[in-house]
Image (cartoon, rainbow, N blue to C red; front, side, top):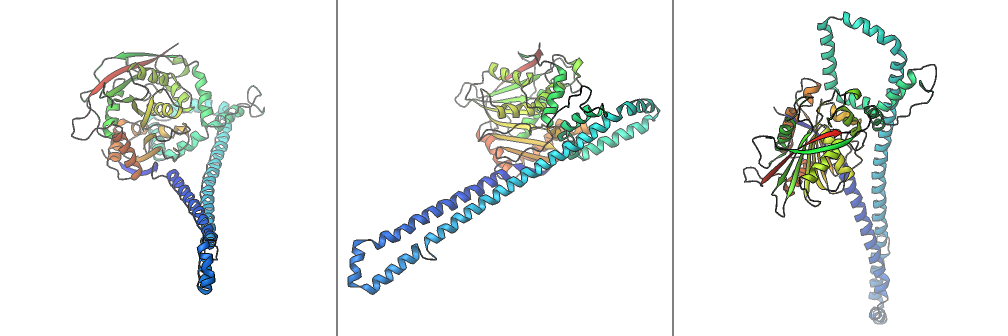
Length: 476
């Protein structure tokens, strides 16, 4: 299976980095202007030199020529003083252009958000107002539709969603408006919804947080170290494909919604007991996406946790990850790489973005929404893989922002459905494409993973690896 990279945003060659470089250029223009102004003052100092002034008596003509030349070079129409004004004017113009671009981007983003919200509210109001009529009709007619026709309709809808993931992103972005519309539409003739109090859900995060309330209290994390076999390859990964492959192996410990090892993660410690110790933490995604509020159990990777993480809140899964990292003996200064798929990637990004007691330097996510995280510390590195056709990365309702710290790589493969598009097989292909990419932003991310010692040299002996397997469960 192979994949083609279709876009790379962010990173050292991204738009944010370009804006920063242009602003640095404006600073250089300012410095040049200040330096030229300083040189302009040399004209007066030169003409005030006593020896030069005495020479005026002996050679008045040459003195006059020298005086004219000095004044022309410093304060004349083509002198350095006038030139300094030009450099500083260029600096102002450059900054104004960058500010205009950023302001335009912000205005466009705000307009798209408002449009998505308005569309969502209209759809929600219509659904809420017509539900008393439509639901009984659909319930009565659905059994009359032949199974073959129903399967074709469902398959066609699934194919359309996979082919248009951007529509899903806009729909999620308007999710707050959708909830408001459903609330108001349930009593179309009585403003304010069933209780007469308007529902205010300003954005996607607020909507996710509101739905997460249906699941009740999060509880506390219970963490226990286990000792199952994780896989045959316990060596140090040498590339991003190796990281995703090992993550898939860890996820294989809980292949079903009711697997006894749901909530397992792995901490790999490289070169334990040395000054160069570092750690890789593997965080699989959701175990049971079909969990409903009244069926929630001890699984920490369920739909309720997805909603809380999408809302930007700390979750039991995140608490358990941090506890497991402490139990694995990760020191406060040890470099840490977090590798996560889906919900695991969301939590990895949140831990880095919100801060912790650990020195997380790098994050690699696969199929994970991360736009709900406000930003990442300067100097950190986040490499996000997104499969075109996978709707899960769109569930934050926005594209990942272009930032110096985060590089988002979108790639195309051949998914056969919504579930398949989110699978590890496609992300292994995407990771292989990343390893072979010549894009400068991707190259800088890969260089950081190697420089921190997380990835070994291909064909080399690699670091010593010590593995710790933990299971995280939800306790009341």
